[in-house]
Structures are given as C-alpha cells and as structure tokens.
Image 1 (cartoon, rainbow, N blue to C red):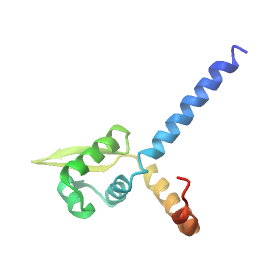
Image 2: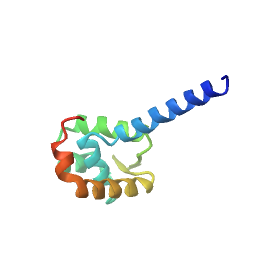
Image 3: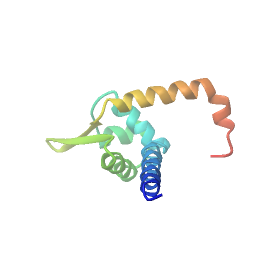
Image 4: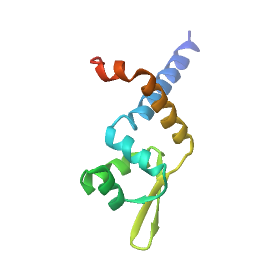
Length: 113
C-alpha cells in the first residue's frame, strides 16, 4: 500500500503537467503566435500586426509561451526576436491540424469543452 500511494501521486502530477502543456496552446492567440513563429523568428511588432491584438496581449502570451519552453528570445539591436525553441512543437501542431481536419464538424459543434 505504501508503494501505490506515491505512484498514484506521481501519475496525478504527470497528468496535471500534460494538461498544462496542452493548455499552453489552447488559447487561439497563443496557438496563432506559435504557428507564426514556426515560419521563423519574429519581433513583437511583427506578431502584433499578424495576429491583430494589442502589443500588451502579444507580450503576455509570449511570456507564457516562453515560461513553458515553447519559445525563446534573443536581442538583436533594439528588437527582441522570438522563435520556437523545440522543433517537436512543429510536430504537435501538425498532428493537431490533422486531427482537426478529420474531425472539424464534431469539434466545431462540441459544447462540452
């Protein structure tokens, strides 16, 4: 019994981490920013123009994505450029798009999420 309890705790923590991982991409703006950064480095200004939300919102989303390890930044002159840190993010995004393409009608009409 002593061994089961810690193992259950570890599994619960892992499940929470997995959920948080996907939560990082669950916001439409964060998803779009990540998608744009897969095409190459971009500044906050470029992302603001492409996404159509305020600089503050883009900066907040970038901070979240950076904290979670999806993106990183580097200074170039007066600009901070952001890029996707881990190429596995590209794979996850491609898989998500494939699943959505196969199930778009059901996902679109889902009222349980």
